[in-house]
Image (cartoon, rainbow, N blue to C red):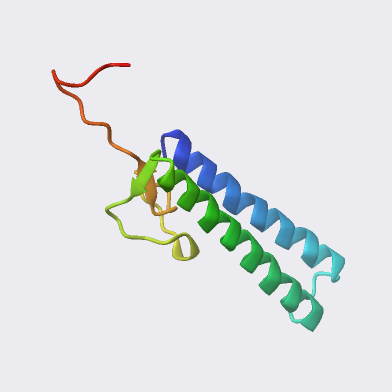
Length: 101
């Protein structure tokens, strides 16, 4: 995995996993505990909504575009272009007519 955007996505996912691990510790490591299951459901909902919102804002800002792999953050897979977020760096056309900045 290379590039900033895949790294950002993996940090977002890792944060969610860390929160779930801490919740599991609070509930005594019992993943079958109804309280833990509710905690996990809400944690995942909040994190995925935030991830979706972040990437949508990045797309609206013109920084990223949908990746050709077609994956969505909630069903991420390892893609070398997007890291599983479903978004890759926006390709900037280059050529003699483009102003370099």
